[in-house]
Length: 122
Image 1: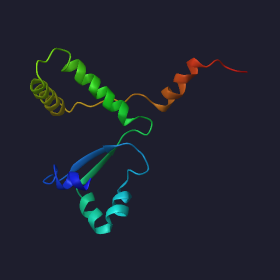
Image 2: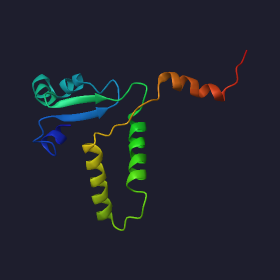
Image 3: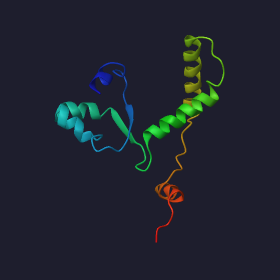
Image 4: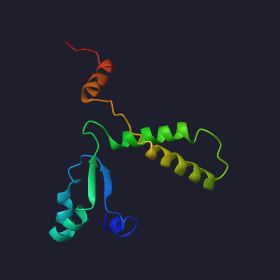
Protein backbone atom coordinates (compact mmCIF):
# COMPACT_ATOMS: atom_id res chain seq x y z
CA UNK A 1 0.00 0.00 0.00
CA UNK A 2 2.82 2.34 0.82
CA UNK A 3 4.22 1.83 -2.70
CA UNK A 4 0.87 2.74 -4.22
CA UNK A 5 0.59 5.89 -2.14
CA UNK A 6 4.16 6.95 -2.77
CA UNK A 7 4.06 5.98 -6.45
CA UNK A 8 1.03 6.06 -8.74
CA UNK A 9 -1.27 7.81 -6.28
CA UNK A 10 1.22 10.15 -4.67
CA UNK A 11 -0.79 13.26 -5.60
CA UNK A 12 -4.22 11.75 -4.87
CA UNK A 13 -6.12 13.38 -2.02
CA UNK A 14 -8.33 10.32 -1.51
CA UNK A 15 -7.82 6.72 -2.62
CA UNK A 16 -10.80 4.37 -2.69
CA UNK A 17 -9.94 0.78 -1.88
CA UNK A 18 -12.39 -2.03 -2.60
CA UNK A 19 -11.86 -5.18 -0.58
CA UNK A 20 -13.64 -8.15 0.87
CA UNK A 21 -14.56 -8.56 4.51
CA UNK A 22 -11.55 -10.64 5.48
CA UNK A 23 -10.50 -9.91 9.05
CA UNK A 24 -7.07 -8.65 7.96
CA UNK A 25 -8.60 -5.87 5.86
CA UNK A 26 -9.08 -3.22 8.50
CA UNK A 27 -7.43 0.05 9.41
CA UNK A 28 -5.91 -1.50 12.54
CA UNK A 29 -3.64 -3.56 10.29
CA UNK A 30 -2.07 -0.33 9.05
CA UNK A 31 -1.38 0.71 12.64
CA UNK A 32 0.05 -2.73 13.50
CA UNK A 33 2.46 -2.62 10.56
CA UNK A 34 3.28 1.07 10.18
CA UNK A 35 2.80 2.39 13.69
CA UNK A 36 0.29 5.00 14.89
CA UNK A 37 1.81 8.10 13.31
CA UNK A 38 2.56 6.74 9.83
CA UNK A 39 -0.72 4.81 9.69
CA UNK A 40 -2.76 7.88 10.68
CA UNK A 41 -1.17 9.92 7.91
CA UNK A 42 -1.93 7.24 5.32
CA UNK A 43 -5.43 6.43 6.58
CA UNK A 44 -6.51 10.08 6.15
CA UNK A 45 -6.26 9.47 2.41
CA UNK A 46 -8.04 6.08 2.30
CA UNK A 47 -11.71 5.31 1.95
CA UNK A 48 -12.51 1.61 2.34
CA UNK A 49 -15.36 0.05 0.40
CA UNK A 50 -16.22 -3.46 1.55
CA UNK A 51 -17.93 -5.97 -0.71
CA UNK A 52 -21.14 -7.54 0.65
CA UNK A 53 -20.53 -10.15 3.33
CA UNK A 54 -22.76 -12.57 1.42
CA UNK A 55 -21.11 -11.84 -1.92
CA UNK A 56 -17.69 -12.13 -3.36
CA UNK A 57 -15.59 -9.38 -4.87
CA UNK A 58 -14.43 -12.02 -7.32
CA UNK A 59 -18.01 -12.51 -8.50
CA UNK A 60 -18.32 -8.77 -9.04
CA UNK A 61 -15.06 -8.68 -10.99
CA UNK A 62 -16.30 -11.56 -13.14
CA UNK A 63 -19.58 -9.76 -13.76
CA UNK A 64 -17.73 -6.60 -14.80
CA UNK A 65 -15.45 -8.55 -17.12
CA UNK A 66 -18.54 -10.16 -18.68
CA UNK A 67 -20.06 -6.72 -19.28
CA UNK A 68 -16.78 -5.52 -20.79
CA UNK A 69 -16.76 -8.54 -23.09
CA UNK A 70 -20.36 -8.00 -24.26
CA UNK A 71 -20.15 -4.23 -24.65
CA UNK A 72 -16.62 -3.74 -25.93
CA UNK A 73 -14.68 -6.88 -26.81
CA UNK A 74 -17.35 -8.77 -28.75
CA UNK A 75 -15.64 -8.09 -32.08
CA UNK A 76 -12.30 -8.47 -33.76
CA UNK A 77 -9.85 -5.82 -32.60
CA UNK A 78 -6.81 -5.76 -34.89
CA UNK A 79 -4.03 -4.73 -32.48
CA UNK A 80 -3.24 -4.69 -28.79
CA UNK A 81 -2.89 -0.92 -28.94
CA UNK A 82 -6.38 -0.56 -30.44
CA UNK A 83 -7.79 -2.89 -27.76
CA UNK A 84 -6.20 -0.79 -25.00
CA UNK A 85 -7.70 2.36 -26.53
CA UNK A 86 -11.14 0.75 -26.82
CA UNK A 87 -11.11 -0.60 -23.25
CA UNK A 88 -10.01 2.77 -21.86
CA UNK A 89 -12.82 4.51 -23.76
CA UNK A 90 -15.37 1.93 -22.56
CA UNK A 91 -14.16 2.30 -18.98
CA UNK A 92 -14.27 6.11 -19.10
CA UNK A 93 -17.85 6.02 -20.44
CA UNK A 94 -18.93 3.50 -17.79
CA UNK A 95 -17.42 5.66 -15.05
CA UNK A 96 -18.96 8.88 -16.44
CA UNK A 97 -22.36 7.19 -16.39
CA UNK A 98 -21.75 5.94 -12.82
CA UNK A 99 -22.52 2.38 -13.86
CA UNK A 100 -22.62 -0.07 -10.97
CA UNK A 101 -23.37 -3.71 -10.36
CA UNK A 102 -26.78 -4.33 -8.83
CA UNK A 103 -25.92 -7.15 -6.43
CA UNK A 104 -29.15 -9.12 -6.01
CA UNK A 105 -27.87 -12.47 -4.75
CA UNK A 106 -28.86 -12.77 -1.10
CA UNK A 107 -28.08 -15.23 1.69
CA UNK A 108 -31.64 -16.51 1.37
CA UNK A 109 -31.12 -17.24 -2.34
CA UNK A 110 -27.82 -18.94 -1.53
CA UNK A 111 -29.53 -21.12 1.08
CA UNK A 112 -32.21 -22.16 -1.43
CA UNK A 113 -29.81 -22.96 -4.27
CA UNK A 114 -28.30 -26.23 -2.93
CA UNK A 115 -31.73 -27.45 -1.87
CA UNK A 116 -32.69 -28.43 -5.38
CA UNK A 117 -29.68 -30.76 -5.57
CA UNK A 118 -30.42 -32.73 -2.41
CA UNK A 119 -33.39 -34.97 -1.71
CA UNK A 120 -35.16 -34.57 1.62
CA UNK A 121 -34.05 -37.30 3.98
CA UNK A 122 -36.66 -38.14 6.57
